[in-house]
Image 1: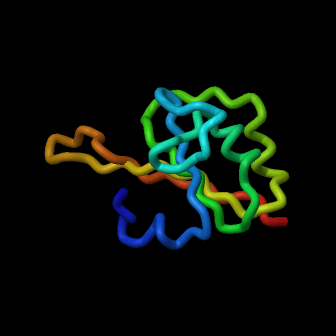
Image 2: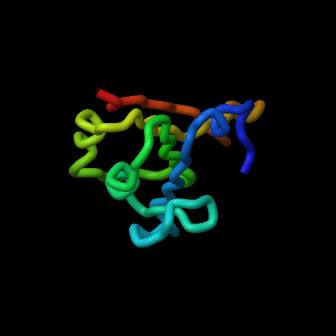
Image 3: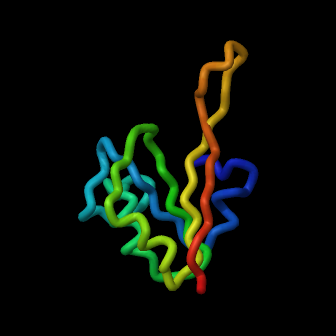
Length: 100
């Protein structure tokens, strides 16, 4: 997977989330993504962890508030780029929380 100018490489650990083909029993690697953001947050064991949302979609996460109380610094991101016609082909949004 591309590092997007070193963005992904700047994290100690990356957990991949894919709401379409992931499973919450997966490891969270690029080839074995987790299905839900909540499960990814619960799997964080180190500061500077990136939860990278691979697949665009709607993620309904009833326990996502747990990120605000996390013991670790967590960044949740996805990436967006637009083509010449302004269609979204990749979007980078990121939220960092926790680490208290």
